[in-house]
Every structure is written in C-alpha cells, then in structure tokens.
Image 1: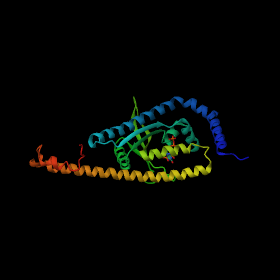
Image 2: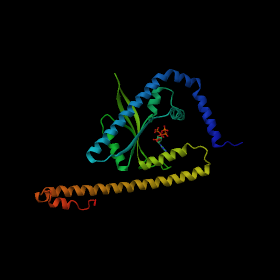
Image 3: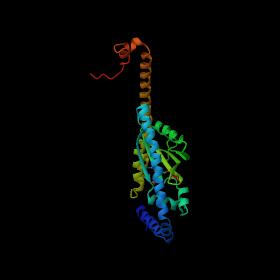
Length: 268
Ligand code: 0O2
C-alpha cells in the first residue's frame, strides 16, 4: 500500500499532536506559561516600537517630499503552530532562553512599499537609528530564492523600556514591494495546499517562477517611471527658482507665470 501526501501529512500531524501532548511538553507549558505570555507581550511591544519608527519615517517623507514611501505595514506574532514546528525541526532546547536566542522571527513586521528603491532607503533609515542593532540581513531581492521569492529581510534588535528594566528584543522586518507581496501571498497559499497532484504542483511552481520574473521587471519599470517624474519635477522647480530671482519675471503679470506654465496641464 502506498501513502499519498495527504496520508503522510495526517501521520506527521498525529506525531506532532502526540509530541505536543507528551509529558515533557506539558511539563514545559505548565512551568513556562506565565513567563511565555510575558515574553509574547514583550515581542508585541517590540513590534509597536518598530512600527512607530516606520510610521514616523513615512510622516516625515510625506511632509518633506510630499510622498509616502510606505503603502502599508502588517505585523504578526508567530503562530504557536509555526513556532512549535520550528522548535521541533531545528531541535531547539525547550527553554524560553533557547527559544528567544534561536528563533528570530517570533515578532514580524512587514513593510510594503510601492518602489524597490524605497525599500533600501527605509532599511538604511531604520539601521541608522542608534537604538537599532542589525543582527542579520538576507537580501532576497538581489538574490531571489530559487522559487522566485523576493523581499529584504532584516533581523534587528530593538530595546523596549519596562517599569524597571530595559530589554532588547529581536524583530524580523520584511520589506517588499506591492508586487513582491502579491506574489508571496499567492505562493504561500500554494505552499499550504497539500492535496495538489505532484505534476500540477510542478507546473504551478514553474508558472509562479515566471510571474516572479515578470513582477521583478514591473517593479523596475515602475521605479524608472517614478524616477523620470521626479527628475521632471525638479527641473521644473529649478526653472521656477531661477526665474523668480528676476523682478521682471516675478510680478503677477510677469513672464514667470507664462514661462513656468510650459507643460502644465490645460484645465480648460
Ligand atoms: P511564518 O511564521 O508562517 O511567517 P531563519 O529566520 O534564518 O531562522 P527562515 O525561517 O527560513 O530561517 O528565514 P527566511 O528564509 O528569512 O524566511 C522567513 C519568512 O520569510 C517566512 O516565514 C515567510 O514569511 C517568508 N518567506 C521566506 N521564504 C519564502 C518563500 O519562498 N515564499 C513565501 N511566500 N514566503 C517566504 P515562515 O517560516 O513561513 O513563518
């Protein structure tokens, strides 16, 4: 009798359930429930700190340059199931210290931008802040994963200030464009569909890989268009500044208004 993927998954889940119900695991839970909940609360605080830093940067860019580099921010605490799987797969000792030390993505902040250059600009702004320490960087934009996954991952350490204590917490920051995020959420769905026949799964993986290349090209072209718009805008402002230095041009009926209206949208 041969086992299909669904059977194997059922067996694996059964083993996982059994190990969750093992005396060792139940003992660990009983002993550590309160400190574990406190640890999760600290991770939530660290998420708030990182989110605020990005919101402040977005606000500043909005005031200074009249544009928002961030489209949205999504944050999450790793699910218990995903955490347990990682502890099991990596054979991490069942202590809170070992979990905190070895699992760096319990707190996750995902920052979605419109343009790839904004990703690196925001990453630099964050890493230049003196309370942020970079633990690890994985650039899956310059070096996409074989399946086509693209994103910039930063594992950072940020302090949180409690009543009588300062605690350094690790947070995984994922920075990606809207196109990269769109791709990753569809691929993530496929990853968890276990009942797709092997041949079809391979075709879909191939199709996704191609979509990743198309989305990478789209990101590059959108960036190029944005850069040309910015260049045109700054040329216009320079021209306006230069003319405004001369009184002849600078009166309400002067040449300035005529000269700088070149190329402006005709609203008639
Ligand atoms: P969850 O909890 O479901 O979000 P490391 O962090 O270095 O110990 P890991 O976990 O392999 O090792 O790190 P990596 O490669 O940086 O990936 C971590 C997270 O990035 C994943 O979380 C996903 O959110 C995302 N990711 C990485 N590779 C892919 C991919 O190929 N496709 C998609 N859709 N997302 C990816 P988890 O592990 O899924 O946990």
